[in-house]
Length: 317
Image (cartoon, rainbow, N blue to C red; front, side, top):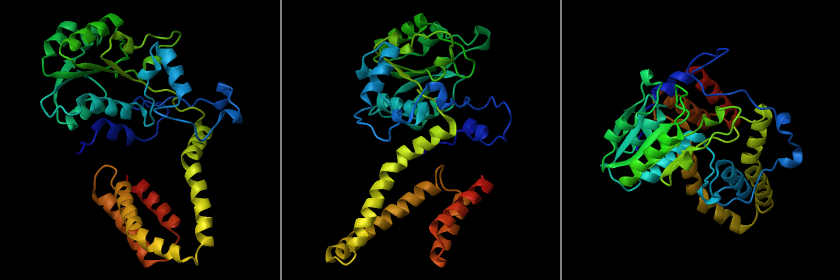
């Protein structure tokens, strides 16, 4: 499966830095002091099974649902939208129809397109203040409809969908055993109140949202980096010391010969994934080829080659 390039995302990320950039969805960093956190509140590992239980319970209480209906994940709302679409459309072949609002956030239409399904567009018109016309929506729902996708608040207009409209949409879709996916990434921007979530509109409604966006700035980034890398680094350090102490053991040589092909395979496959995040092109091929040649022909520390590759990528992209 190959996803087409997202024209809007490529354009938005290639813009020069400006003081106010309306093409990006970023917000100001939240300082840790605002949250009243201390070092004892920060952890690098948690007992997690399908999400950290206290976090799931807190989210469930916020949205007024059972914690069993909460599925936290990393990767942001875009990844959550992918998981939701893939789950609903799994095993349906290429005959299913997906209703997607227009205008919308581009990935929301590209995901079902890449999965091979027919897209039907629900126009949200300027002259209607981007409200959803239920008659128009009803005309798009057929026995082949399996999913409808909307944003609330609407991206890009900011229009909010009334709960009565969401319930009506849920009811229409339920008659044909279809689901309604609502991207609520901006709903918490209704300041001064706690807006009712679309998930309460019906049992066939899926909601994606974003919790804890850009908290603590650079300090938060370092904590997250430590949480990702710390356990693996500690394990590598411990195993590396043991491995060095056992360098004369017969079993070590046999084990090292056995895992050599696996290690080479991991390195090559990992290098390919890193070198081709959006598919192979001449820029990625140039960086990967130059890095491989430098590793082969010199005794430079690989970290220097990695840094040079990053600098070259910055210049080329």
